[in-house]
Length: 337
Image 1 (tube, one colour):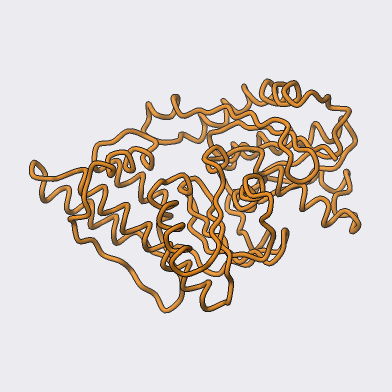
Image 2 (spheres, rainbow, N blue to C red):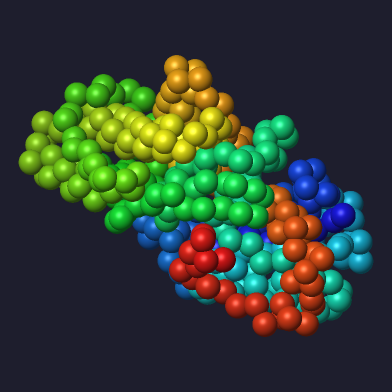
């Protein structure tokens, strides 16, 4: 079974061709980082225009690398939320046009569902159930993956996502966009010497606005005496330790012994090593995607699309005419997909 799948939720135009559930034949990613770097963050209108300009070329490149043609495809998959609505609409519109022309089904995919599925591409042995710690620029979730298409949100951030906090800290430290990798690079030469707050709730929820404000206040207060690398290290250790602690608490309480890291911040070296360290100490299994599957890409969306398609196929959910009404949903909830 072959699927061509599109991801355009933010500033990467990506198209992948997947064979069956986990064999990636191609995964082309056209990044706009150099464009948005000029503005210190993603400009939605510019992102949308570049998706329009790039998507046909990226799709053609994906087919060529996979050595298949449009006529060989069984379905078209696409991210339909959450994300920047204009960017999502480009991918959804292109997917609908292809599906109509080829008379094959469209399979809608939740973006975070794709990030979780990235683990299947790297860890061929991984199967549900497991806990997933989703850490990205727009999301911080603990999700219990009961089955490939059955995901329950256990906890989430009440304010900033962890990746958003990294970006805001990067700005106050005078670092370039994208901020997360820059903070981590600076932290490699620092020590955990600053005392920063941690927010605790009665459940497993997260909050990063307090630590973000504390970093901003310290940076403004110390100015010339600020040890940027130490503050970067203290911040990184604090937030990464926090998400791992919350995840482990939830796993222990729910009797789950496997966890999979997901999302753009899953590329963070300290977070990856901390999760492996805790897994070894507390006797649970930890999985994480290859770095290339952490940031937005169509291969992870393709993997989720396959499971959605094969799970629902018998229920006629993916009738071609019904799904031509598919629309982009900017604030799509993971448990409401």
